[in-house]
Length: 90
Image 1 (tube, rainbow, N blue to C red):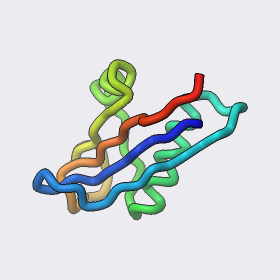
Image 2: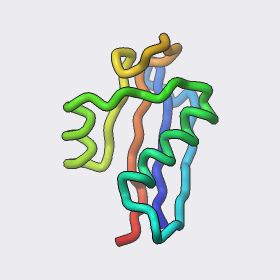
Image 3: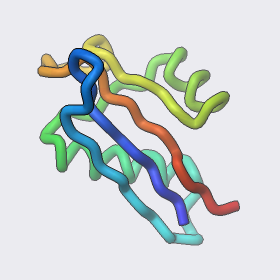
Image 4: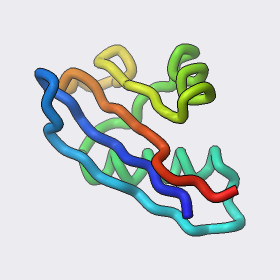
């Protein structure tokens, strides 16, 4: 089971959060992450964030990254969106 936790943070408080699960064995890890982000953005009514080099490196190292205002085309009403892999099948 692959599970990714996403939360929007404003003033050091969680505004919204969601856990997205995917138990598909056919999908790669990358596809699972992008599929989860699609679901998160739909539920939170957000545009998809742009992955910058620092996001990619941070996610590779720690399975976690933050998307700030500069990662979104539209303006956001929170400080950042954080995603974190909480469970992963190997």
